[in-house]
Length: 252
Image (cartoon, rainbow, N blue to C red):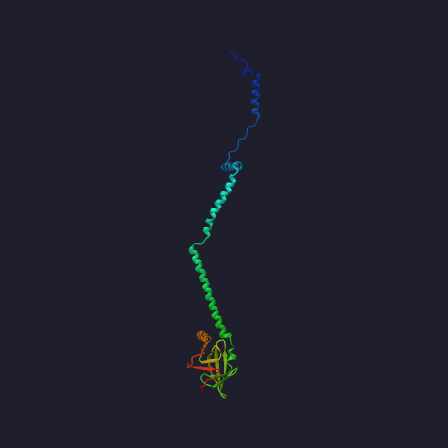
């Protein structure tokens, strides 16, 4: 009963020697250091690295026509998105109407401005630059409706051989100043468009006064000229008016 069978592990000297040698080698080896626990960020980075490393394998394992179909699908989606982008950039009907109204308003303003500039430029040229008042006033004039001559020189108005007085023109303001011995007077003057009639009006006038009077008269004179008529520089019989003409009439 108490005898052991030969060849069992506990009685075999060679087996016991190997076990003893293994225990000694295990005791002689230094213990392996424990790996520090990985943080959540490091674990996530490791997962992402593994996913990135496996992506090419997945793509390479895809079917041959899958990449071509993907590109075609991308182009199709871009083509569908293009009309949407164009629709967003196109103005609405109300915006187009406002734009047209703005263009029409700008064009009308430009036309009106051009007309105003043309009228102002034409009037300025006609009033100040088309003729020489100082030269045109000289010569022989006749009282309107008579054959009585009046000689006007560069600085004098000779009513008769014995009666004359000095004058000075302000061609910018269209005014005239008179002196006779120790007497002085002033007034304004205006030529007809053909320069054959001259109106002298006694009174005190400024450049603004004569400008305001001449604007209306000039427009009316131009209309009369288009109709083939000549407008006198002033209405006959007006107070303080002396109306002269280059041609005598039949009266005394």
